Length: 265
Image (cartoon, rainbow, N blue to C red; front, side, top):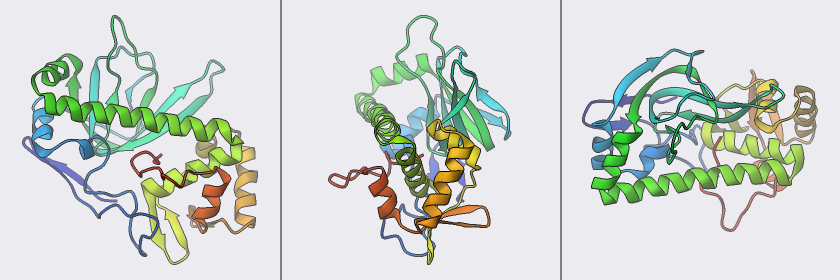
């Protein structure tokens, strides 16, 4: 994986250009020069945001925030990875997303005593830039071009959420699993001679928590995909051998196709 470095005046995310379905062998699909919120802002915008931030480091295994915590802050991921989760009334934990360098975590537009609707668990040692919502509001008032870029980023978050609901609700558990594997390919896939190797390891239980299924049902679905030659397993990594067949299972839109910024885990 590539590393992210940041100074007090500017930011660079080092890595290869993001690749599409025709990526050559060895290309890491999800590693990009800009990712997440950083893709929507100019260097000048990022300097303005950086001027509002104060830093915080969090070790893997700790929580950045808990569901039900008082809202009012945004967290810019400078390095590391964060898993967003939500707990159901029955006590089950569902995985919502895995975020990384360049992403923003938080909720805006709240009045009164707003709270976070999810928890954020750090799964890889991380550093964050923390932005107070009241400071961000002043920045939005003063800089119209930044406000436009920020609005576009918020619209993308809604589109991403809608696309996940579509895949989870319309095509059953097989479609939801196929969609999750496609998103993992776009976020953490490396093209090899055998197919797209998903470079982050997830247990079957973790995959089940992304789609609201049981571990046993995910075991069966993965076995069926492997038997059909759609995926393979290699040293604990999933290798997608036929991306087109996964797309057919969840009826992935082809015209227009979802951009990689939306079709991500």
